Image (cartoon, rainbow, N blue to C red; front, side, top):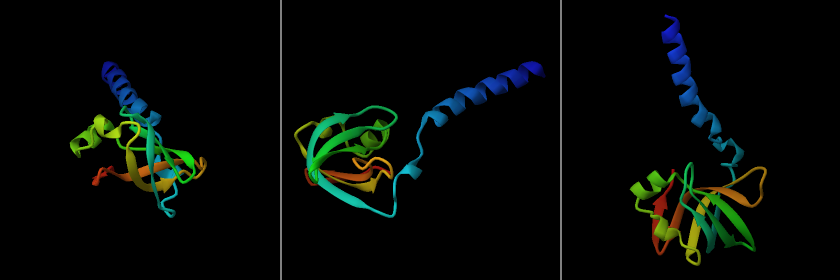
Length: 116
């Protein structure tokens, strides 16, 4: 019985660690949707979420995208997020960081990808 309890504790700990490391979406203000159009200056197609830095509205924004597996499944590849391209991002601003947003969708070259 002790071996089973120890194994259960180990498995629970291993599953809980990635969840604890993942941030929540509550820090974004869903009551204030924003749409930004600008030039991608930097992109990351990595876990847990891809990101882009977007020059728009007179400043550089960090847009938190979806995980790469979801973006890929919905047709948005890392090649689509190259610096220099024009993008429109719709989402919600971070409550504490005025230059960060959670992206709900992104439009590049006339193609819109739902991220959530």
